[in-house]
Length: 238
Length: 238
Image (cartoon, rainbow over all chains, first blue to last red):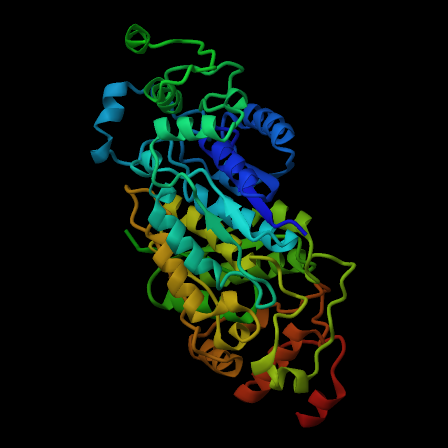
């Protein structure tokens, strides 16, 4: 029997590259997507379905209605504005506080769901797209978070189960390197969707779009994305 | 401002005693109950509402529909029988494997929800009824699980938040001691509901009822519970 991996997949760049790496490593893939009230959930699910076809994976969609109702984040509460972010702001990010797009305990909740799924289907690994770039703003993307989660997981499953392990193949990478790695493993980057807003096209100005644009540009890889609104500065640099 | 505690409360003995202890320690109480497809959820919610009144707490109910749909447990899947358990079986429990009433990653999932809630309302503690007796069968009730969870939690919240701490005041106790402690702190034990089946009266023969019965008897405290079916042996001992 082939070893199984649950791949947490938002439909974005990082998690899609991570899932493609899992496939390269010989896992049978089970994509897992969570809807928690994020504005882009519908558009993300479309992306995940397309990515699943290319990766010959099945897909499990989960709802986390409590997080949806809880609010407190610009991603799930339309009364809080999603800030447009400049590249300059991202450059000084070493000192950044967690931004208003933080969703309370989101990765803890998503991973807890993915673990329950992994325990039931007997998956030995849970692949995630956590990376060094987002870890600067979001502590629940860090290598330390992954280590601590795996340490906990040994006690979170039945004594009859072997605890699955969270695998974060991109955890030391910044986004340009992730794009290059994605090209190497032939990840379907053109099918990924990163925008916080959830419109058909990427907005081009939210934090997530800014990171995506910069990643392709700095990787020297042609960006397949159509942006609704291109930042003048970014364009003039291209 | 009074310090706040989220109290994970199933409506059963242990979590109700833990919540009462939190109240004694001066916390403003926010009871938290999760429905994940357990057979007894409706009856549990009724109990939690009554307990909340006595403890002057507010109550938050959460749904975890993914766990409900996942199955794989006698508690959530009516095609799997809930075993009747003898006191003899419970005595040899040091060597017990996790029973069929295990729900995949349940406590991980419930605590992840409670943590998101705590982060949003600014609660500094999350009280749980984990105890040494259930930790023998369920690894996610153990002191080690609590330590590891708290270690993870430091990285699971925003850098703007102070991570709440999971507090398990009963973690070294067996149930008879919990009953005695409950009497000391004047916990509303008569309002608690422990049965796996969810009928109006406690069944009296499931693992949870057996533990409850034994706890009162060994504590030397009059059991306020009306059981539908009293085990002959247990009765003859009384």
